[in-house]
Each structure stands twice: as structure tokens, then as C-alpha cells.
Length: 130
Image 1 (spheres, rainbow, N blue to C red):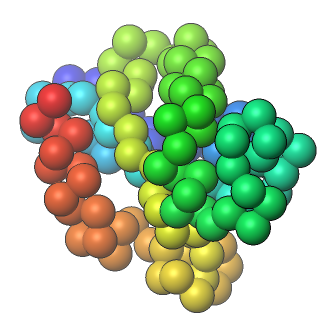
Image 2 (cartoon, rainbow, N blue to C red):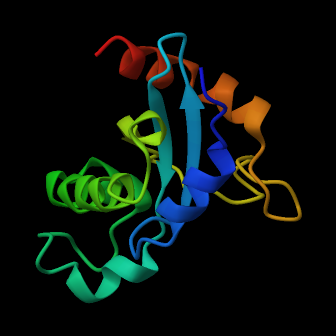
């Protein structure tokens, strides 16, 4: 198989306006799944269109069907820039903001990969079964 750089894919995906963080994981079949971290700031101007309150949480955003559609568009847009083997097959939007306090990131704002694999093991497993 070809060597895939998750960091390269994550970096391209993070260029999308509504994606703050991305954690790409491959499975035994070579399919890539991604845990996506969002932040509230880019959504503030469109909260009304999303039928969400101004005081909504990351969890409210993550569970919104309309936000899910926005993230699908971001993933599809990213996939157009990637080779077939690098394309993201499934994703899960984290209900918790990726930051140092939440444990998702190191003090230098890098992804804590081993911790993320453990924290999202169920979600990753479920995505790999789709």
C-alpha cells in the first residue's frame, strides 16, 4: 500500500472555514476516518440559519444536522484535493472543543494522537464498520 500522511490531509481539511481541527485515522482496509473538531466562532454569523441559539454549545453545533451538512461539504471539498487513497471516507464531529484543557491538544497545540485514539475508540470503531 501507499504511505499516507495524516498530517497533510489534516492540514488541507483545516483550511476549510468551519473545521478547526482534524484527526485522521486509517483502518486495516486502508479507509480513512476523521474526528473533526469545530469551534463556535466561524458559526456565529450563521447561527440563525442553523436554527441555533446565540448561547449554543459546541455539543449543540456538533449534533446539528445543518452543521453536519456544512462539514460534509468541507470533507467533500477536501477530498477533491486528495488522491483516491487519501480521501476521507467517514467522519465524526467531536462534541467537545479541541484544546489543551480538554486534553485533545498538547500545550504547543499539537494533536495528542494516542490520547485521541483512546478517547474516540468507539466512534472510530463505529465509523470503520459502516
